[in-house]
Picture (tube, rainbow, N blue to C red):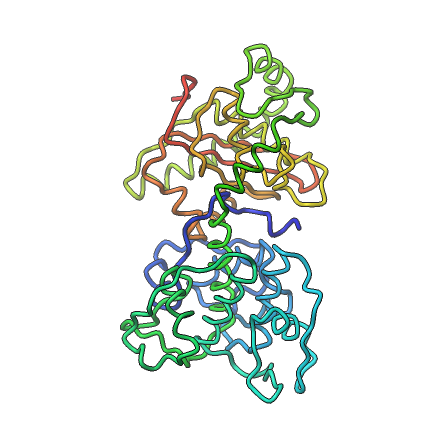
Length: 404
């Protein structure tokens, strides 16, 4: 699925922290809202950037892309849960019926054991969903997808008001930062949840899950795919082997001049990132040409890859950056990249839109503002099935090919 693969940090380890006061601390640095979010003006100002990202990566059903500040219903939250589950695990085939609704999302979630009814075979689809109900659904949904949330006792000031059946789930929300206190360390378990809060909570769960990829799974996949032929170039790079000077020269001769067109675009993105880092008293990132060349080649590969599984199906026929393929490209050109060091985006953007989109997500922003980074390489490729593809490398390690 194209949308769910777009603009994801390939080792998402951080979650975003939830609800009104938790967001309040970030309002000052909230970037301009990207232009692609439908009806985002109906959302609270602090939520608009996050909602834009969630909509763009396919986490929000079209029916919920309006009136974001309205209280969410139980059926609406079920629709968000189904969207996230099916984007990762495929369509839910089973159904559990209710006496008061034929809503397909309620039936699917009940079949998975994620969202229960309210008793007497009733789901109450139009009833407002409460914060403790959200916590339980999020916990069960993560389990159903295949990632158990860490367990801790909730430490909110109103812990006594939490229903016994929701206590463990609320502790998990606090442990992961997927949900947090509203004010004065109060969770307000019976309080209602808005659409915008629901969407951003689902975005946080999405980020958490994507950060839990098993190291054993990564190593197994890496061992399975040892080499690839890059599209249109004929260069074969065995897994984690540097290119010979002849191989590197072949690619540079064939593509460097062709790809020099996007260079001004690339430099502007790099400059915007450095301006943001300087505003946060962080090191200015130097351009490492091995990272630049690797990012350009990886962008070209992804732009032209013919696959129904989405742009993140990498040159090892696995999710490329998640499992190291993009880093192998940079390594092949002589670069050194930390394993968590990459951001990929498919689609047409201005440099400012691209950076704004990254900075609207805490996870992406934290990656860009990592104080350990010292070097940068950004590659853009026009064309392909998404119109354009861009890839950003950041690393604490550099090569001998640095652009001052």
